[in-house]
Each structure stands twice: as structure tokens, then as C-alpha cells.
Image 1 (tube, protein in one colour):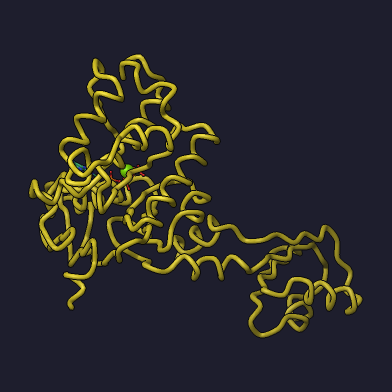
Image 2 (cartoon, protein in one colour):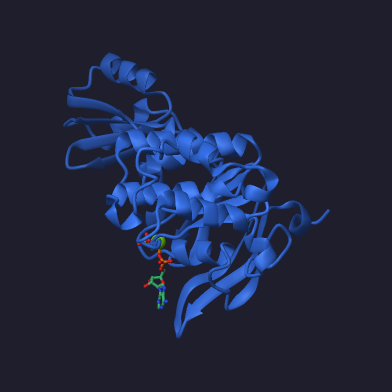
Length: 301
Ligand SMILES: Nc1ncnc2c1ncn2[C@@H]1O[C@H](COP(=O)(O)OP(=O)(O)OP(=O)(O)O)[C@@H](O)[C@H]1O
Ligand SMILES: [Mg+2]
């Protein structure tokens, strides 16, 4: 079976140009069923442009996007797709419940299949405000309804563009748990976010975009193993060669004006050797790497 048939999403050499500007350039990847793929990158990197093509909201200028083997712009494909754009405008005069009935009726996994949107709203903790008109909801409540609605029709693929922006911590946690639960039941999710704790918690794979190009496509484990590195920092009048002599070959030593930084997966061992060496030092700090540091370093390369 080709990747085009087995993958929920298949993106092949896709580009999107706006006039002379290339927002997405020659991007290819597949998304396997039952996984969560996190799309990361700086403001303007091309995340929304990319995911809007997966969601069938815009067409590529070049290349091919397939969702469940079909063009995501076709109505029948859209019936298996839940989408939350970065900027979503729901009709203000309707309530969340009315919207859910409307959405549910249009999805193959919705009303007709016996799925009750009220179950979704209950487990997503939306019941407290789903009977109010959308125009009278707070920004966070509106966002939560929009995301809940994407799951109401029990779609095969959900595309979420910064779903938790503006949510309080408890609402974010509830959302994370519900996304995980949906994926455990077989749903596939593509999510963008600037919250790296969210991406770390949710994603099986990370795509990193920079200036429209896909510069990383790796399992989350690869990033987490980089995270296990720690940085040992201290000040010393010692020469760089003396400090380097203490470090194993796989440790990276940087020195600037008496400030040393050693990146290592064995910070305990290095600190022990430093103390035993008798070199004078002060201001010793040991810090772990965050996903943010791993990604920032990758973007700086
Ligand atoms: N309709 C458009 N016409 C012209 N340029 C556009 C259009 N839509 C997006 N762009 C440009 O394409 C680039 C990518 O935009 P995009 O919205 O995909 O970024 P993003 O990665 O989602 O950023 P953010 O993190 O801020 O949401 C930006 O430089 C943006 O100005
Ligand atoms: Mg965006």
C-alpha cells in the first residue's frame, strides 16, 4: 500500500505562494492514523498556511494534499474533517448547542450515526455556557466552543490551529485530556501551538517550519532525548584547555570572558571531576534543557 493510501494526511511537495511571496515551500510529509502531529515555528513561518491546506480551506499553488486519500476541498472529505482555524468567527446569534446540532447533522460521524453532541459538550466541560448566545460569551469560552465543535461530528482528522490560545490553565488541561482521549479512540490530530508544554504533552511527532520550509520532521522522542542534556555553567579564571581536559569527548565546552558552559548528559560526573580537579570556580549552576532551548538552537543553525 502506498503512503498515499495508508496515511490520513499525505502532503507531497506542497507550496503556497501569495503573489511573489512563498509562504510554504516544497513541503512533504505523511500523518499516520491515530497520531498527533505538532506543527511549530515562529510567527509567519507558514503554520496556518500549511494547516489551512490540510483543512481544505485553501488550495496549494503546487504539489498535492490528500486527506483520507482524497482532495480535502471536496465536500465528502470535509465531512470527515474537524477544523478550528486560528481566527474563527462563529455566528453570534446562535448558541453553542444550536451550532452543535447544525455541525452534527453535517458529519457522517454525527447525528445520523447516533453520536450525541451533548456527550461531547459534557466531557469537554462546555455545559456551563453552551446555551448562551455566542456573541455573549467570553473570548476563552468562545474558543472552547469552537474547539469542541470540531469534535462533535466524530471526524477522522481534526486540524487545530492554536486551539488553546487565551484559555485558562484548567480549560487547557481539559482540552488536552479530551484531545488525547479522542486520539486513543483512533482520531488523528494536526495541531499548531506556541505553547511547547502543550506540544510536548500531546504530540507524537513534531514538524518545524522556518520561512515556509520544513526543517525538522521527527518523533517527539528525538527532541526529548536532546532535552536530557544539561548545561553546567560557572565562572573561573582557569584556561579553556584546563576545563576542556575535564570534559569527555561528547561534552561541548564554550568559554567567554571567564564564563564557562558545558553541555553534557552527565552533569553529576562533570561537577565531580571539576571539584576534584582543584580548579577555582564560582557561581556554579546546573540547568536542564527545555524543549524551547532545543528548538531555538535548531532555528539558529
Ligand atoms: N493571504 C495572504 N496574502 C499574503 N501573504 C500571506 C497571506 N496569508 C499569509 N501570508 C503570509 O505568509 C506567511 C505565513 O503566514 P502564516 O499565517 O502561515 O504564519 P504562521 O506560522 O501561522 O504564524 P503565526 O504563528 O503568527 O500564526 C506570513 O509572512 C504571512 O504574512
Ligand atoms: Mg498561524
